[in-house]
Length: 377
Ligand SMILES: Cc1ncc(C[n+]2csc(CCOP(=O)(O)OP(=O)(O)O)c2C)c(N)n1
Image 1 (cartoon, rainbow, N blue to C red):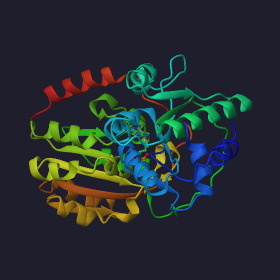
Image 2 (spheres, rainbow, N blue to C red):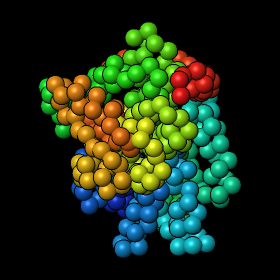
Image 3 (cartoon, rainbow, N blue to C red):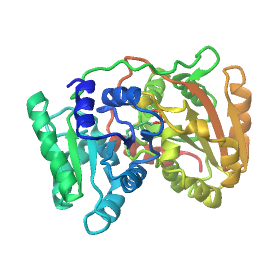
């Protein structure tokens, strides 16, 4: 389906406002939609629950039906406001929820999407949420859309549109190109991190390409990649996992986060400030974007990370924004009394041939727990 055709159909049905969290299944639609909308008509939200809230406010102030977009892994984040804000038993808010159906049965996908994909329809049914698996056939799609909008408007209810992988054709977006000359790439930053930590340091990495790159780097260096815990799903929770780990060991815990991930569940920061020990080392690879799913902006440009870190009771803040200063600053960061925060500004982009880890999360868990048992702690 051409993104522009789909967008036009939504426009004809009166959709003028979009909010959500990016997803690779929906990225070409999002690129086109972004090229057609302004800052007031498209908001990239911190998380999917927030997008449902924003859409609710939009409807209440305009009476027009908004569209919320998300990956189905974000449905969990959206569940609470769906059941206790927009539901007919509460405020009964009409909206379209366009959801990338990762892990759809019969479609090859990464392991962390399996569960979400399998239970997708059962969850919607048990919630009594009306949904449509959108057709690739133009005429059928238009008919489905008419029915969807009739029911949404007449019943003041949300409706979920399930979108299969590869549904949208390519749309080349005009993204701002960041000058790469001085910045590290995420892959280079990860390589430097691995080269400057100790054998007994515990590493936990975030969702998306960060964990995939880390896996490849360990392989290239002939190290076992499963000595790092890769949080392949559960975006935004890597720092919570790292906190839970760190309070029970004395080794340095190196939590490698992304800006999109950190923003998604930023409320964790003061919890870290309050409860973590001095071994907690939080790194954010800041490329100001959701690079793993297409490079859409996050709100990272609107954060002063130094203030953020100190105001949530981290004891130290460091920033690396060029290749030259890496080693010295990283050493000081690692040796500092935590919780400490290191912002590494990196450029967008990754190797086109980036693979996915060959070992499963269960293999990773097994090796990682053994690693923890065997290190000096
Ligand atoms: C709850 C949830 N929402 C959305 C996604 C889709 N997703 C996977 S990686 C990613 C981007 C992560 O951005 P960031 O943390 O900044 O890391 P980057 O990709 O830029 O390295 C998104 C949105 C997801 N996996 N889970």
